[in-house]
Amino acid sequence: MDPSIDIASLSLPNFNNTLKDRFVTKGWDSQSSVFDEPGDSSAKMDFLKERPGIDVGVYLVTTRNFQKHMKRNYNQNWEGSLTFQKVARYLPHFKSAIEIPIYVLGIDL
Image (cartoon, one colour):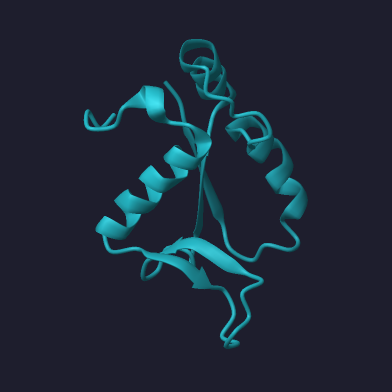
């Protein structure tokens, strides 16, 4: 864990902003369009860098344990957010629509 991150402040929006800051700092493009159609904002990737996102998708999500910990210890409500467990359970149902492998990473405490 990065010691500069105050875990108590990691509401869902702050968590997303922290990820964005870290990815962009490392050279990832934020909110890249999936299609080459100008003005089509309907399909965007959160982050794209060279080959990742084209050859492989990376799905970064918190675990159920992480979300419960945040609620219990810091009163941060993550209700409605997907969890690693849900993504792992539901993603195989979309294999006919997704043409690249998806690497699912769960953030836990």
